Amino acid sequence: MELETSRFGLLEYEEEKVITFSGGMPGFKKYRCFTIVVIEESPFQYLQSVEDGSLAFIIASPFDFFQEYEFDLPDQLKETMNLHSKEQIQVYNIVNVQGELDAATINLAAPIIINTTDLTGMQYILPNGGYSIHQPLFSKRVSAGGE
Image (cartoon, rainbow, N blue to C red; front, side, top):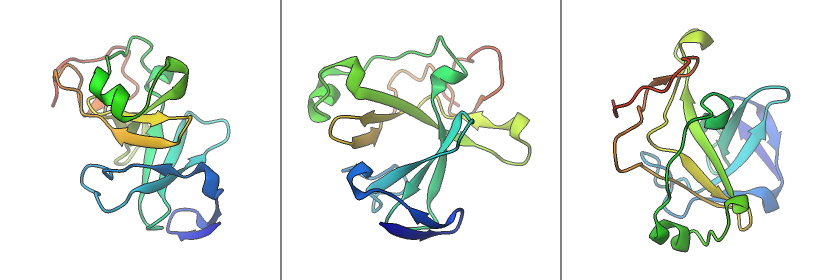
């Protein structure tokens, strides 16, 4: 499939690799289908809407930056997403770059959970407020508190 995007120009993607967010993304509820655009030799990727070529989120695995990052998924969410093992789960977080990359932040309070078996996803807002939505990406430690 092909999609004209504002960031990548004409983007080719495989329809069988489209991730479906049944509830959309917070703030973008009407967009439910995304593909991941891999950036070679970079910890960053893009979550590109296949319904709107101008909508893409910079994402990264939080574990590339914060090995101590952890949270529990409630049983109800695991059931809803048909998650039966850790091997089925891919976690990303949205990265916000305003200006220079060294000032980038990552939203650790709302990870994106992807079921790699059936390619469904959701952004899960962590209930305890223990992680920041504006965690400095290149900080040595994770700051507590949901800003």
